[in-house]
Image (tube, helix red, strand yellow):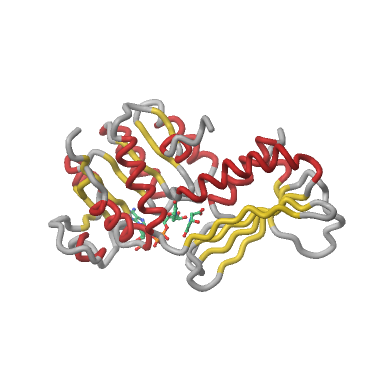
Length: 271
Ligand SMILES: NC(=O)C1=CN([C@@H]2O[C@H](COP(=O)(O)OP(=O)(O)OC[C@H]3O[C@@H](n4cnc5c(N)ncnc54)[C@H](OP(=O)(O)O)[C@@H]3O)[C@@H](O)[C@H]2O)C=CC1
Ligand SMILES: O=C(O)C1=N[C@H](C(=O)O)C[C@H](O)C1
């Protein structure tokens, strides 16, 4: 593939605008299409002008099927219902996808997995290099500190975020639970209130903060008697996620099928 044509879904959103910029800055990628939801006042607007990178000659359209011949890889950071519609269309049309949308339920995640048997997909709750490195560090910390610590995951995001805990926090919990041979569905505790009783060692706690314009912060405590390890990541720009998504788009364009995440894209899985 010479130049990879990218479609950005949810182009008017916080991530959508950053994704357009990241695609225009990435070598070998070109914006081919951009979509927004059917009621959006932004339909028809030039995607480049919207993102502040100058005119690209790509107007926002309401339906991905209108522009199905104009892209090779779809980057989708929208909402779960829209992502599912786009997934079905990409599956029918043999298009590759990079999915950053969080908050998918179990049935929706099963659909993503099934689609990965036919098309190539990168699906990751966080596309930043730093967070993906943290996932490796969490695996090591969990194996070393093991069952002798209390583990708590604290995350903070902007006031507009609609899902909680964040997809990243949940993935962190999964990595830790896997390392310790626990089932996250059995040991997760989401917030605490009232007469909770003393903490059970095997639980993994999640605390959520929603406030102001926080881009995304995650901190994991491994707390013992007498010492505490903290593994923390703070994103100060959405371009860190958008740059990762552009990198994932270039990477997935080389694959025919399969479900991957950023550990695969960044070559971290075998470390
Ligand atoms: N994986 C990662 O690295 C990251 C993931 N995320 C995730 O990305 C998602 C989006 O976040 P964010 O950009 O902040 O949210 P926004 O609400 O700013 O953006 C979502 C955009 O999608 C649009 N949209 C809704 N339905 C459709 C549709 N059917 N077709 C096309 N567009 C549609 C929305 O339009 P409207 O507002 O008009 O409804 C909105 O413009 C979230 O799930 C978030 O958690 C965020 C950052 C990093
Ligand atoms: O909604 C956001 O903003 C973010 N969502 C992702 C998540 O849910 O983990 C990633 C990032 O932290 C920003």
